[in-house]
Image 1 (tube, rainbow, N blue to C red):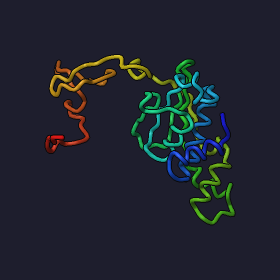
Image 2: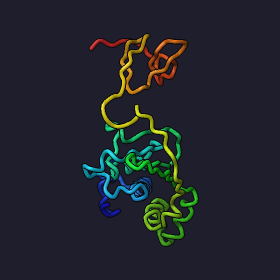
Image 3: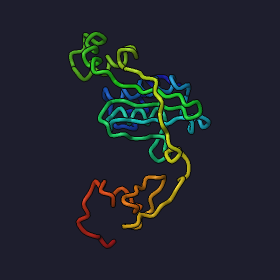
Image 4: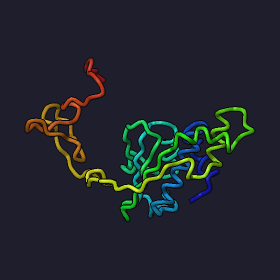
Length: 199
């Protein structure tokens, strides 16, 4: 694994600015990779070994993506919208998995590690860099039920929605009263159609 400073610099470049979330995300990713036995996840032979579940759409997630090389488009980054600053790292070769959660107590502990820093945000960034993993994170060894449909690689299935005729891939269809539907037609839409636009 490359050094923290190099990984943070790359992450900041990708994310667009330095913040405490970047520091936490880089450290979380470094710890997660170490725990599942993947030294450098960006090496070609490691790229298909690691899957990461992130539980928040905040700055730390960009850092985790930068360090691990895991991407939604590669199907190696999974997003669970739980609003928790946490990530689970899964080595799909060994089935080892660890969930790492940023502790709430670390917010107060930064004062211990950067007592002379008057600016709160600078204090967080410095403190999070110096704080031991055991104070910054809670770590759980977990088992992840990873369906074959969610594995990286080509789609495992293609099914047409019986209402809108959209192609649904990777087992994401639902069956309602015997009818095969996409999640949108089953009532899980995040939008309302206002009009059809000609382009």
